[in-house]
Structures are given as C-alpha cells and as structure tokens.
Amino acid sequence: MGCEGLDLSNKNPHHHPSIEITQKCNHNCIFCYSKLVNVKSGIYGIDPYNPNTKKHVDITISQYGEPLMYPNKVKKAIEFTKNNNLRCDLQTNGTNLNENLLKEFKELGLDIIMISLSASKPETHKILTNSDTFEKILNNIKLASKHIYTIVRSIYIPNFNEKELVELARMLNNNTEVKEIMVHQLIVHDKNLKDLRNIGDINKVGKIKDLLLLVDEMKNNAPNINITIKGCLLVNLKDMDGFILNSITSDCFSDVPDIKREYYNFEF
Image 1 (cartoon, rainbow, N blue to C red):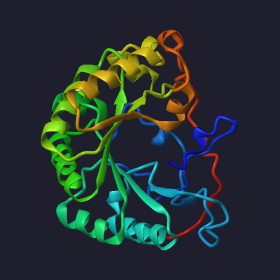
Image 2 (image 1 turned 135 degrees about the horizontal axis):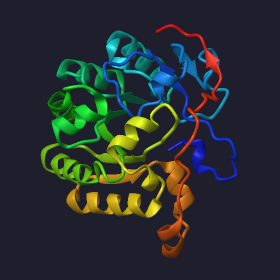
Image 3 (image 1 turned 45 degrees about the vertical axis):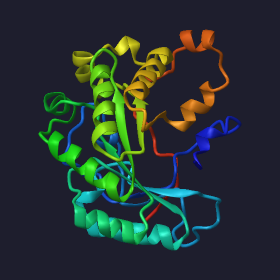
Image 4 (image 1 turned 90 degrees about the horizontal axis):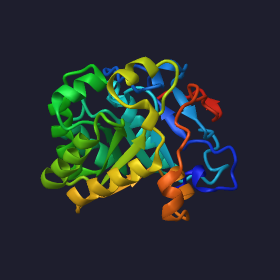
C-alpha cells in the first residue's frame, strides 16, 4: 500500500519514507546490507517541516539498524507519524519487545509491526543472525500479535531454509495471531556472497517458480495467515501466465543498494 514500486510506469521507484533511528543492531545477519551503507539518523523521503507536500501513505520506522535499541526515540517517531495522519509501520528484529512497550505503541497509534524471523529452529536462526535470540523473538511475535497488526518478514535462501519457513508458517498459524508472513527474495552482493554460498544455492536465488511454490506450500500449512511477497515484485508477476512464471528469473544479484530518498536531519 503506497509503494512506488507498484506503479510500473515509474522507472525509478523509491522506498517508503522512513525514520532512521540508528544503524546499530544487536544481530549480525549474514544477508543484511544495512551495515554496508552509511545511514544517518533522521528522516528519508519526507520533509518533516512540510510533510504534506507529497501524497505519502505511510512512514516506516526503520529500514536500517534496530530501532528498539532506543525505544523512547521510537515512541517520538510514532507520535510524529500519527500527528501527520500517516500510517506508521515499525520494522524490528523483535528482541527488545515486551508487553508494556507494545501497549504503549498501541496507545500511540502504531499501525503495523514487522518482525524479522527466517527459521523455525534456534540453530538455524543462529547461523543466519549470529545470535541466540530465537526463542525470545518467537515469544515476542506471539505477544505482539495480540496487540498490533503483526507481519513476520522472512528471507528465503534456496536449498537452506525453505523447509523451515514452511514449519515456521505452521507454528505461527497454530500459536499466534500473526496476520501476514512476507517472504523476501535474497539479495546477493559482493560483501555477503561468501557466507551465503556456504549455506545455500546461490544459483537458484532468482527463480520465481521456486519462490511462488514455497509461498503456496506455506499457505497450505498456515490457512489463517496471509502469505505474501513484496508488492513491487507481485505487481510485475500478477499478469503473467504460468508458462512465463515457470521460466523467468529475477535479478537478485546487485551492488549494495543506494538510498535514493532525500535526507532530512531531524532529532527524535
């Protein structure tokens, strides 16, 4: 909703406006590019002093780093977003959530919380994140889904975690009130190629058929959850017939993405 990538006539779509709290993170995920770019704290893509100059739908807190390392700044960011009548999405790894914080976020008007989890077993989670936080995140997903519309964001690594993503979908369907699981294709670049090549099949990363079959299997195991792919990919696929979908490959090999949106220095 509100994603510029949904407009096929836009040849250079930007991400949603975002509020960046910090580039620091208590995870060290092998697939993450956030640590490879220079991100300042502040606002990207929307002028905080003239926020209605463009027809934005929402603001995401935060597309880089772990914002809940600074929960009070997140609260101020939610207030800013809701005071400007925009949908407020919070993106987090979920480790620092708790019930009191979730209740505060709900009272402030947080609309969506997106929590990252790409495994169904602690040992696999540790390989991906270099952290022993699996049980904490799973419990916090369950807790968050009782209070706020919750989306779990999962990275698909071919020949590594597809079976676990199916099992994760089943677990979330049976034990939480999660509304969506968004399955993301892996983005491979020079800085993460070595680690990813050690665990998965990099040659299968961009095969659309495999992604869609995985989504279908996850849905069969989680009938109460909407299993999705990102909108800017979906809009490019939805009018294609089965023959094309069976054969096309998405370009998932890239340089580290640049931040295209204009930066505004703003303290929270």
